[in-house]
Length: 117
Length: 234
Length: 248
Image 1: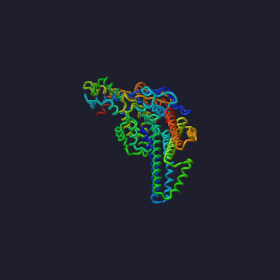
Image 2: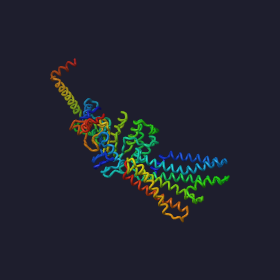
Image 3: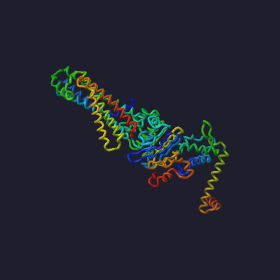
Image 4: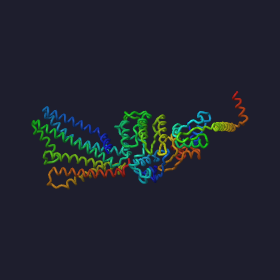
């Protein structure tokens, strides 16, 4: 994964994992790699990897089961809420970028409809 | 775990390390940064016991470095240092003879990853292969402190990935990993703390993720801030 | 310590093997001479063996000093000084390995010499001429030489131990040059002066501790003792300087 070294890495890895959960690449209840494995996989410091799981757990997206590892939450509503939230953010980002170009949300919506035809 | 207290080293009229007080704790991977001549290598050699300080001390686990600390500190220098008559196997056997924490099994595993064979003679190794051998033999030790001076220098991309993975596997609560390198970007993600040396002085110590969050800059950016445009290596 | 000594031997192995090979060659020449009744070859063999005995032991000692020099002044010093060994162990291993090598070489040459002389007497063809050649050779060392075994033994012990003390003095010189005078251009010269001064001192003590009345044999053994005593002192001094002051 290519990091932006100017922003906290844990945040970027967390976003990556969240995306995987949102799109179903990591299904609810499945096991996430151990802290050290996550560190090696992403090429990040183990403390950073630990932080990722800490933050995911805070957001209720994963849970650590003693002696067994960390698992994606089985709360399906939570995952779809996550997906929804990420989608909304994507829309907002798009609209912000359009606003910079001087295009209003309505005009942007029109452009989308035209694209689909 | 490893700290220097006002450590100074003078070579004649030149001061290589000037009253440096630093502390390295277990559970972290430190990037030690600075251009050539900033004192990084000299500091490490004093911690390894190879150079005697002009004043000040280096403490390992509370005691001054010496015979006992050398049992637990693994140092990898930038220069090649094996005896000319040795083969790769001899190097491993030597380490096995003198370091209790050395595992020959781990050594052969690392040799395989580095694409080196035991029969090779140290004199016939290219500089890249020598660099890989130094890493392999150092990391085959199960030390408490690893001080790697330019571990990525002269090493091809794939081997660098192997080294990075090895470093991350060793990083744990009980170990201190201290890496010094010019390849700042290589270490961006694997280090979690950084110390910056300039002209023998300690100029900054940072927690990297915190710095990214608070200032929105990378370790490379901070490097450029401190050293200006003299040394912006990639 | 044993492990350190093992590596010290390995570092100087090449030189020692050469001396061994040369000695074997000289012995072959001698044997051909004696068994084949070729007086000139016998003479050549004897001369070669005597020269090798002196020269070989010197070379072994010098190789050890050169190795020490390399071990403190080049990057291969990291091999020794990164290991959890004290300077006492490191230097002690060098001295012991060197001492043992020299003793072994000396003993071998001595035994070889004794064997060869016995062989020579057994063959007994015009020994006088040969005997005089040998005698004049050895007379260079002492006027009243009596060629009986105990005296020869004391002479051999003296030569061997004086060489050991010389190498010990050279060790100290090398350590002083590298630990105390590091980087300065005159360090080689100063250490040379130190070595010469030490050797003079040893000689002085050897002379002063004896009076003329003692037998050659006693004198040789006493000198041996002094040489060994000094070796120990110089070792401790060198190890102390290494431990406290040496940066590689």
